[in-house]
Image (cartoon, rainbow, N blue to C red):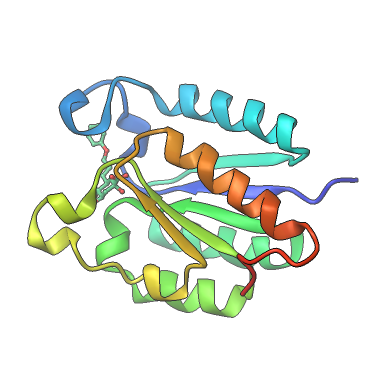
Length: 152
Ligand code: CA2
């Protein structure tokens, strides 16, 4: 049985494709999920794709991943910039975590320039739109090979 990679999405990402296409593009989260599952199939990775608007639920899922997943791809949404709880959970999980943002958070408001997740992430991808999710899955697949580099 293949151990899955959890792809976790935070608040308001369920709204993708309905508003703000200039910032986040026109794809829905369901489109991104379909692309992730397809990319995972090619890479030999089972993808468990989830979204929640609740910080504590993200913490629960990160704790669950610690025993059930091979790694995590996470777009924490606005909790990126506020959540010590996510940083603590990711540090405790001791899994490779790739932080993904659709937009280039460094080209936006100053409050988006700081991430509580980045210091505990193996890698960060931002500004590439939905492609970032696929690249993150590729990085985790690479890390699973012997001598992979994205280990924590
Ligand atoms: O660029 C990203 O992926 C973000 O994580 C998206 C978050 C934002 O708070 C982060 O700074 C960067 C916001 C997601 C909200 O998505 C919406 C999509 C459509 C309509 C409204 C919100």
